[in-house]
Length: 249
Image (tube, rainbow, N blue to C red; front, side, top):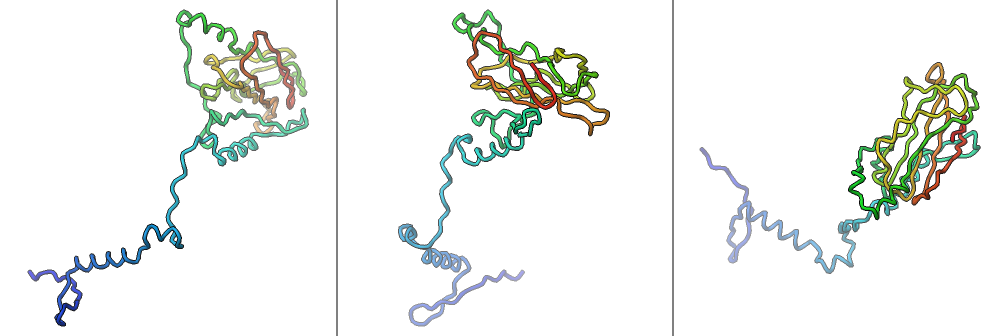
């Protein structure tokens, strides 16, 4: 078989003789030329040569300016005009140091478990149990559409500092409404599925609707956000919530 030909470049040796260069020597010569043209490290600082910037130092995501802007956007998306209160209100809780707004799902249910046998808790920490938050009931005091009866569905949930995910107190879909036929009736609470953990602020989100004959005829019954600061006192608190077409208690 004929031997494979390699490209050669002629160069002049002393005495005028011409010597061939191999392809490997060609590559080495080209690399040397590139190195010669490259500005030295010290000279590059004062030249127009652009070098890649070093990566930014790592920061906590909740201190980032972009995160602050994104939280503002999501709060704006969760803000509605309440005709009963005649003002705009945000209907969802946000804690920038607990939930990262770029990836956090406000609809996800909490699956964390923090329960432990009472006899394993030292006496010095039992006071925390006495101050634990618990929701006793949610009553429908008034309805702007009357009681004929009213078929209510939706959610009542709370968020704590453990994972900030949904702890449902009331959860019914459109095909499983609760019928409210008189003032003072209580929502049939089915939660919480776990005890609340400590939090700087506990958030309660109420999103209730009235079912109409068609889904397009459904109306918002109550849409509200309530914050309860921690630590709590030892007294039972009652909160009246006037929103959209109802007054809850």
